[in-house]
Image (cartoon, rainbow, N blue to C red; front, top):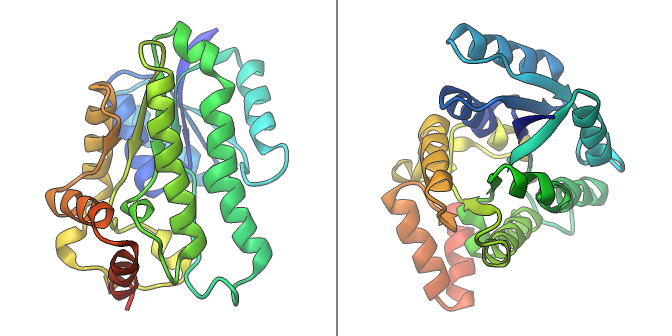
Length: 254
């Protein structure tokens, strides 16, 4: 079985940037997402840059059986995860009571359920190859988020889960949680808000986030927050009384 780095949500944004960084450092990468054309284009780009061409596996991890299908395709190709990068996720802006309920449940299915499944499913192979799990959360996870309630809640779960898993698997499997601030990707358009709603000093490119994430993961950091202003915001959110933290999150989305 060939050891590989599996990157979910790799068709664009932070996922694509992480794929480039891992490939550049010599990892054999598996790209997975729903959009095959974008994955194939990225695989060709990575190969043209001199790295080994990534494997491409299309999968919808938010549907029942999605993670099973991914695992089956990996096994059928003789691929065994050494590192799992759980980047796939999305959010929806608006009042939770007014947004489509099924769409919000899909956020939980992808951002939390699928991430948990893929974090735990391959523990034996991750340990055998001295690899690990890099979960992509957000600074949104450090505070409740009126206007993005389900997304913030899911990212809070990812942070809490990752920090606990880091301790449980210490010495066996490396576990890091990447918590970027605002990044200019297609996430905002899908969520339904303008990217310029966030202060520019919090913004960081997907490439810089991916580089910080890779470096922190390889050093075995528990939580990685790219950028000084975002680190300060994360610390502030944890230090403030809950009522004030929610006001801070609400103000950022006006």
